[in-house]
Image (cartoon, helix red, strand yellow):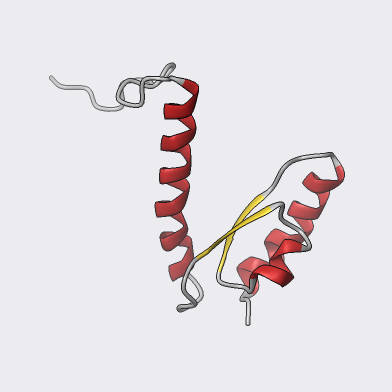
Length: 88
C-alpha cells in the first residue's frame, strides 16, 4: 500500500503528464498501477514509508550516469558544477 508521499506525488505527476512530460516513476507499487501515470517504472522493494526515498536514489543515479555516457558527456566533470567546498 503506497504511503502519503506517493499520494502527494501522483497529482503532480499527472499535471506534468498533461503537459506531455515523459515520466519515470521509482516506486514499490506494482507496475500495472504505476504504469497508469508513469511512462516507465523502476521498481524498488517495499519497505518502510521513508526508506524508498533513499532506495530511489540508487537507480536514479545509475540512470543519470548511463544517460550521460550515451550522450558522450564527461561523468567525472559535469558541466556547470560549482565547487562546493572551499579549502582555506
